[in-house]
Structure formats: C-alpha cells, structure tokens
Length: 350
Image (cartoon, rainbow, N blue to C red):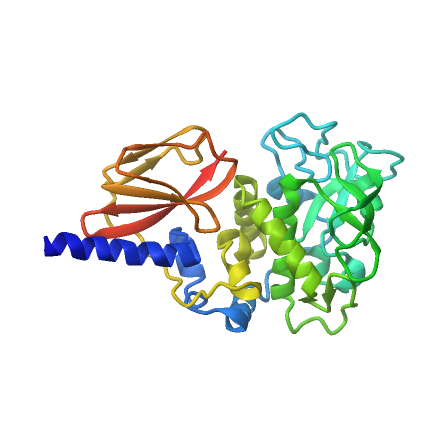
C-alpha cells in the first residue's frame, strides 16, 4: 500500500513538472540542450545564444538548400505566403520557378527574410543566409510585405490569394502598416523571430531599430504578438522536419521548435528551473503511429496522460488507445507510467 502511494506521489510530482514545463523526450534534443535545461529568463537566453551561435554560414543564393528545407514531398515549394494547409492552394511552384521578374501572384518565388534584412544588416553574413529566418515565398507577395512588421491587421489594404494581408494595425504604439500571414503559419513566423532575437543577441551593433525590435531585442508589443501567435499555431511536423534539415546544413537548431516552452521561459512567466529530460529505459513501451491522424495506440503503459503545448491535460487514461481525431493538428506530449518509471513522448497530430 505504501509502495503504491509513493508511486502515485511520484507520478503527481512528475505531472506537476510537466504541467509547468511540458517536457520533450527526444534523446538528440536532450544532448543538444543539456546545458540549457534548468535555466530560465536571461540565463536561458544567454545559454541558448551560446549554443546556436557561430553556425556554418551558407553562400547566397539558397535555391539548392530550399529543395531540402522546403520541399512539400510532392516536388513543390512549401510557400507560407501561398499555401493553405488542409485546403487547396491557389497555385504551387516547382523549384525551377525562381524569380526573375514578376507581375502578379503565382509568377515565381524568391527569398523572404522573415526578419527584414533592412533591419538586421541583412546584406552581410551571417544574417543574409541564415536559413532559420529565410524561406521561399511568392515574389509578388514578398514585395507586398516588403519590410512591414508582422501584426494583426485592423483595416485591410490588400489580401493575397491565400488570405495573407497588409493594412493598418493597432499592434504597435504608432499606427503602422503591417503584414499578417494566415493563422496556419503564424507560429512558424513567431518562432523564427524568437530564434533571431536569441541567435544574434549581442551581435546586433549594425542592426536598425524598428517596430518589432531594438537591434535584436524584441519590443514589448512584438513579444505579446509573437507569444500569442506561438500559442495559436503550435509546432507542426513541417517545422520539425525543416528544423532538422536546417540543422544538417548549417549546424544549429531553432530552440523554440524543439522546446516550445522556452518562449514562456524567456519572455513570459514560466519558470524553467525544473526542466529536465526523463527518458523511458524500457524499450517495450510502444506508441504508434506517430505522427497520428486518428487513433493513437499505446502498448504496455499502465497509465497515459495527453497534454497540449500549454500543459493542459486533455486525456488521462488506463486504456491502450487515445482518439486524436478530435484535436487540431500540431504538437502534443504524452506522459507515460509503467512500473516505477515515468517518461514522456512527443506526439505529432497530422
């Protein structure tokens, strides 16, 4: 009876830590972020900067790299300014459709600096070719975005074929023109901006201030916006795959894709002091399929708890299946108990 109570107490303590920090259990991530775990606030920011600094600088242009980082498997370009996840995009690009001249949407794609190069000394390396904030996008829409900050449009001036738009906004203290992507890519863009702020922290002497940042330091308004977008659009399989491919090319990762909770640990209210990695040593526990579309199977775990990226408990069960069809696409975490062991598993809902 005492042993059972001790196990229950251990499980609840572990659950409390998970609810605070939402653990990932990827062994590569555990090793890569080993020195960052257990830190919070500016100390975490400094540790992450040192970890992702001095990446392998790539030569311009990046057309060949895009074929690795932004391939939709079908041989088409993954363009956040034209794609419609779960729907039919108005057009698609082959990797041969590079700009060039354009006169309308769908003519060609080019390089988009999510953090405009105007403000990050972007004609100089390494920011010019840093793939964590460089993506292929429709040339016409890219031009419409220009160097506008990202924000929530209140008065629409122009709308693209996939629903991205420009217009005035109340996001920033002074009324300004902003660019607002569709909801499905707001998290991707937010996490790229968080990456830039950390990667170039203290290396921004030649950068220019703008609505979103002073040098590499995000403004209060930008932080609030980007955290909201980060929570609205959780990490997707697309981002996980892209992060891995960029890592293979330039040797550094986007920490906010691997560990979404780092955002709140640096700019929000979460305390990451208890953050740690706890891997299951028992290989007989199986969780499949992953990514999952509908039914998630769990073999040999006594108890399972499904969490969203905010730490909210969605399911607590002793059953061997969880119906994932009722949840939106994105990243989830599964807390597993077997015997006296407790571990976590990252789950991708398609």
